[in-house]
Length: 627
Image (cartoon, rainbow, N blue to C red; front, side, top):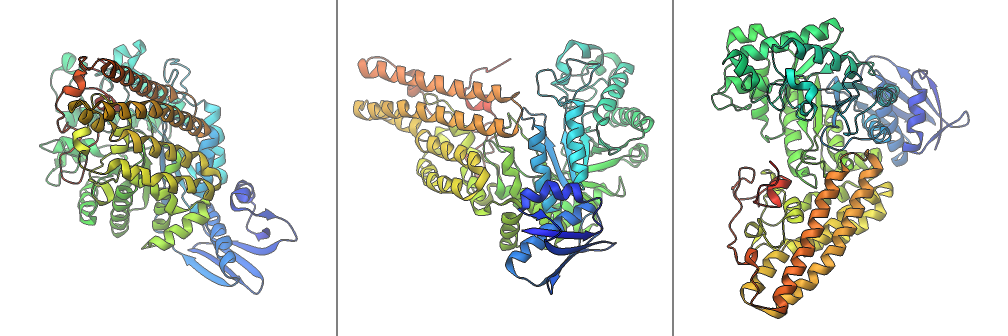
C-alpha cells in the first residue's frame, strides 16, 4: 500500500523507512492520505471519508499506531480506535552472555518487531560481551560487541522510539570475566568481585565507562543479583566474617559513587536484599523482614523486582508491597521462558506474565520488561521470544488480552501464525507433564542429549507414549514452514528435532528390554534404528547450525557443535557395542544390565506433573564431566 503521511512527522521519517518493508507499504505524494498529530494523550487511529489520522504522544506510540491503522484498514475502511498505554516503559532484556550473541542484524530484527508492537525499552545484557580496551581478555573469544556495533544498534533503536540500556554486572555473575589472571587481586570467589578492594573499583569504573559509552541513555543496569557467596571467599580470608547486608550496602555505595561521577542513573536487581533478610535465603520469602536501619542505608538506586515463577496475582501484590518499603517506584522484570531447554515454555511464560502484569497495573508500576535468558548454552532460538513479546505489548496497551486478539495482533505485527509457534510448547509439555508445564520439565532436552546405553531418564518416561507424541508433531511443523514466510529455518529445525525424538526418546528403553530378554531380532531392529538415527541427528545439527548463524555471531556455537558431536559419537559407540553382542551373545553390555532408577536430582523436581529437568552435564553422564 502507498501512503501519503503529513503533519508531525519530521522525527518519524527514518523509523517509517525502517518499517516500510516490515509492514509492506511505501510513501509517496500520490498515496492514501494520513494526517499525523503529536499531542499528549492516548493513541488514536481513525479512518473516515477517505482520510486517515494518527494521534500519538511518544515516538513509539506512533509506530504501534501506524501498525494498528494498516491492520484495521485491511479489515474495514472506516474505524476509530483508542488505546491507553498502561505503562510508561515496556520492553525486553536480550541475553548476550550465555553463548548466543546476536549480530547487529539480529538485534535490529527484534527492534523492528518491538516498534510495531509498541515496546520502547531494550536492555542488552552483557556480563563480559562488550569491548573494554584496557582489559583485552575481557570477553575474549566470546563474541563481545565492539563500541561501533552497539552504537549502530542504539542509533537504530532511537530512530524507532526505543531506549536501549546497557545491563552489566558489578558484583556477581562474572565467572567468565574473572577467570583470567588480570582479576587475581580483585576476585572474591570465581564469580564475585572482592568488595572493599580499591582495585575492584578501578576495574568497575573502567568497565562502566566502556559499557555506557555507545549508548544515548544515561541509565544503566548494574546487576548485583545472586551474589550467594558474597564475603565468603577471599574477602573472608582478609577481613573475617562481616554482616553481609553491610558488605552489600558498602559495595553498592562505592559503585553508585562511580555512576554519579559519570552522570548515570543506575538500577539493580533487588533479590540480594530479600535473600539476606530471609532465614532460608529465599528471594520470595513473604516472611522476610529487611531491618529498618538497613533500608535507610540503601543508596539512591532503582530496584528491579524479577519474578518468572508465580501464577497468582496475590503473590506479586505481596512482593510489590515489600518492594515499595525499599523504593517508591520499583521496576518489574518477568520472563519469557526461553531458557527451559531446547524449546520455549510458553505455558509458564503466559501464565506468569498475565498474573504479574495485572498485579503491576494495580500497583501503578510504571516500568516493566521481559527477560529472555539463554541458560545452559542458549539452545532455544531467539525467534521463539516473539509470542511473549506480543503478550507484553498487548498488556501494555490493554487491561485484558484475549487469545483471539493476541493471535490477530501477532499475525499482523510479525507476519507469523501464533498457533504454529505454540506447537513448540509441545516439545516439553508431553504426556506425563502438567498443563502449562509449571514445574519446568524439559524432556526435549534430556531426551535429545541423554546417552542411549546409560539412559538416565528412561525410568522417568517409562509407560508414557513419548515417541508417539513427537511423531505427531512432525507434520504440523513441516506445514508451518510454508505458512510463516521467513521462519522456515526455525520450523525446519524443530521439525528435525521432532523427527529425532520420535525415534530416540524410547529407543534406549526398547534396547534394554530386548537385551534383557536376549531377543536378537529385537536387538537387531534397535541396531538398525541407531544407524538411521545417527543420520537424522546430523541433519538436526545442520538445521540448528543454519538457524544459529542466521541471527548470532559464531562464538558459542562451538559448544553446541561439541554436544552434537558427543551425541553422534555415543550413538556410533552404541552401534558398535550392540553389534559385538549380536556377533557374540556372550559379550556383556554392562550399561544395559544396570537397573534403571528414577532420576530425581536436585534440578529435576519429583512432583507429579513433571518428567524432570536438568542441565547438559547432568543429562549425558553420571560420571564427573568436568572438574
